[in-house]
Image (cartoon, rainbow, N blue to C red; front, top):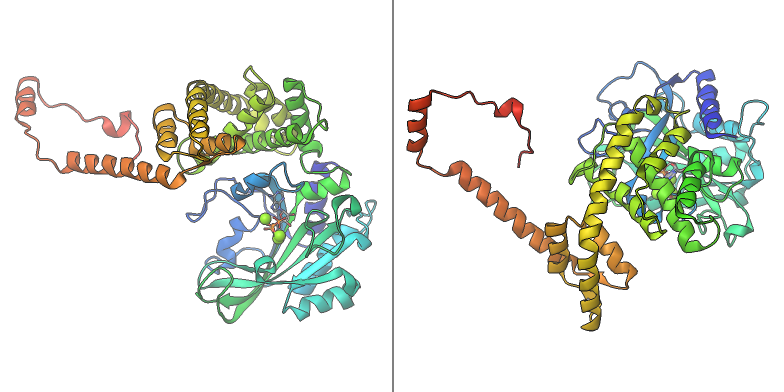
Length: 476
Ligand code: ATP
Ligand code: MG
Ligand code: MG
Ligand code: MG
């Protein structure tokens, strides 16, 4: 089943059950606490917090998400991308645990002919929060899942919360057993690769207080209205339904991976190291295209830096795979072809997306040319001095003079078996920032002698200040 069909079926199923279909919001979060949307519920946050009353009591969406913290997993696990689509259904004081669980089970297990995904119920394993007897009872008695396939997990995995004070509650997750080829048995509590998590059901039922940390806080009481927030990874379900090993081999990513292999002359499947690089490229290029489509441009801060880092990582992996020519145009083109059927705006924005990505590649290749030799020398010197740590001032110099991002220095050093004195690097960065700030302050406060300007003005008349409209720069 193609990704586009998985998406259609999802929306149709919930629409037929009275949910309002809400289009995906932009990846650029309309939320000061977040750089990028990382879950389907983000656009609904004001409803869950009770700040705004929704015009519907149930809704469904397929939301574009980016999770930068998963970047190190990409290509190494079979199931983590930096970009993915989260299919969700939401209830605002409408149905609760029983409704959410029944809907999920029906959609996953009903036959393909009748509009479902046709998963084998015997391959589905359930986790519930350790104290959530209510959810366990529904799975056991209403749905009929045998107790051997239901596991209890603690707060770190199966309890969700947002804000202080804010809503919180237990989760219940649905996991798919991919069989012994993926390792030891024992359920999702012991093996997340074999028992792949596909769907998280969050039951928002309590209000939480402050406490001491992420997993340690008091429950203040019940919420006035209980809500449901669920998220299923579209690419993970596609991995199962398309019978492939990982989410870089499904219809929408495989084409990109194929192009990366073609451009570098590698055969996918020939070796683990090159396979990881090919998967990283497929993932990162797709994420970059989706970010640029939503208006993000590469930069040194915030979202711009997220994009820059991901895109440069893709380009660098292409270099590691042996590419010597620019590759961004070709990879962008195939990504737009792969994702365009689901996101037609990609076709309309093709020119702009290509221009941004190609320009960033050119800048980065220039950076690589000038910085790599310096870094290689520094690595050689570090090793011959018998040290395993690259000095912080070297990393700083690379950053300051050659525009080498610290992540890149860390990665290249790690490939050579070295770590980097990051504390030293950050100390120098801070010194530089502080010096720049002090300088700016001095300029602002300084009582300069303006008599020379007075003389000019007396001769040539007043000038119009155009700085507000004609230049742009970042406030410091
Ligand atoms: P995992 O434990 O596998 O990292 P998670 O518990 O962090 O997943 P949730 O926050 O519960 O994920 O998100 C809901 C669903 O979104 C998951 O069940 C999964 O199907 C999907 N998902 C989460 N992270 C990713 C990712 N990096 N790439 C692809 N799909 C993802
Ligand atoms: Mg995760
Ligand atoms: Mg999880
Ligand atoms: Mg989860």
